[in-house]
Every structure is written in structure tokens, then in C-alpha cells.
Image (cartoon, rainbow, N blue to C red; front, side):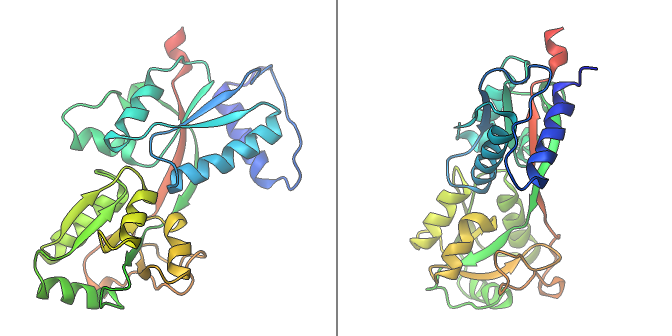
Length: 266
């Protein structure tokens, strides 16, 4: 019996996650050539890092090359549009955060229809967000930061991986729920957003732990809180977000693996 490519990839990903030693797995002739994995963001961000790990494991287990192509810009819309226009043959995959369903509500026009142009394969991983500040910012807790921003309206800005990203949405919830005069500065990836914060250009940042964790450990940034219900293993000394500090949702971000639906070729 032939499995649909979506189901086969789901099983292959599960095998890659649990097997300790690489074992080439081939079935049904798929894949019989390299598979492109589109990341609609610049290199260095959490989606890029996660995708490169997946590509390595899939290459090992399926004995065919899975390679990453970064197509940043437009809040992820450019890369998602390219993936939507790819041949629906299973040889182009898209790894994306929730922006692919958020962006149509934020932009007048996007180059894809998420309900028609993509079939989900699996939820690859779930991560949290971390609120960080540059060491020059005199705040060691979230409450300290709120008081500082209120005492200096318009002085501070925060970086996010881009318009419509979870970092942007949580940053806006933070700003609006407390009536803060805080400027949003969007970047093309979490890596760029964290880099700007390390340099002190945008002293506050909402991003995933993967690009921020080492900067916090090395003292280049100060972690104030994570948005998940429990502490992050990557940042065990950073407290979880306390509801008493402000009204903000618990946030866990899923990275999903999608591809153009095979039904379009029929």
C-alpha cells in the first residue's frame, strides 16, 4: 500500500526524532531527489535553526538530501508565496511559525491562501518567547521595566522578528494592556532582532530563546521573563511571566511543516 507523502514524512520525522543512530529509510521511491525546505525568514532565527536540524536528520534517515532555502522579507510573505507556487510534488516543504495564518489579517494582500495552498505535515516543535533587555536598561524584573517605560514615555523601543510574528503580537499586548508609550521596530528574523538589542539599538526584545539564550548567558542581554507556563530549559534562571504583573496571555509558538497540496496536481 502506498502512503501519501504527507503521512510518510510524518512517520519519517517521528523516526528521526526517536532513533539514536542514523538509519537510512526509503519507501515507495520517495524521495528520489533532493527536497527543498523553505524558511521564510533570514538565517539565524529559531525557525531557521530548527529547520536545519530537521533537514540534517531527514537527510540521514531518508538517504536523500534535504536542504534549507532562506527566503526572508515581507514578514515571511515572500517565502510563503514562493512555497505556495511550488510544484505540488512533495519536493518543496515550508517550515513556518503561526505567521502564515496571522499575516492575512495584517496585510491588505498576501501571495497565498493558507487554507488552499498548504497541507500540514506535522507540528515540528513548540517553543516559548523571552523578554530581554540590554544591560544598560535599569530594569531587572518585568515590573521594573513597566515602571521605567512609564517614567520615560517615548524613550524606549522593542525589537521583534517582524510584523505579525508572535514576538510582535506579544509586544503589542504588553504595550496596549498597560498603555505604554513604546515603539515597535520589526526585523526580518529573530536573529536580527536579538542582534539589534545586543548592540543597544532597540534595547528591549521579544523573541524565541534560541537566538537569545547564549546572549543572556554571556551577559550581553538580561532575561526578564519567558511567556510559557514553566521555565525554559535553555534559560532556567529566567522566571516565567507572572499574571499579577499584567494582563498577558501564555504564549507557546509552534513551528509547522507544510507543503503544497498534492490535490492541486490532479
